[in-house]
Length: 168
Image: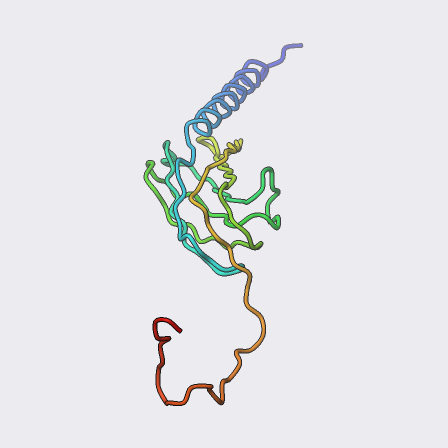
């Protein structure tokens, strides 16, 4: 008995194996070369207020899909409380991008954790690159509560603005 399709099946399996290995190596190499270089934003913001951050990305993501996640603590899972931004990486060649972020906890933030997730050329295997980026201090203020008080009377003797005299 002669097997007629064996060489074709073996050739297809070898081609599939080579494709998976090339996909894995290309994705790994691309993920290692692509990294967040700097993050810039306003020095003051409020909890749960959207803020625009400027993120500089080095490396090439041309023709590849990917995601960028920013968080205030390391190793966050997707949709964790400490995640402040998740943005789709558009095909770009380095440079920078704008990311909308929302800080959830009050305090002073001086370090952000970044996660870049990139696919290989065919999108079969995804790779993740994590890093920490020092940022200029961002003061995240708590949200004010309560209504503003209406002032109906003043201790001034005159109407209008008064300034304290020197020596008082």
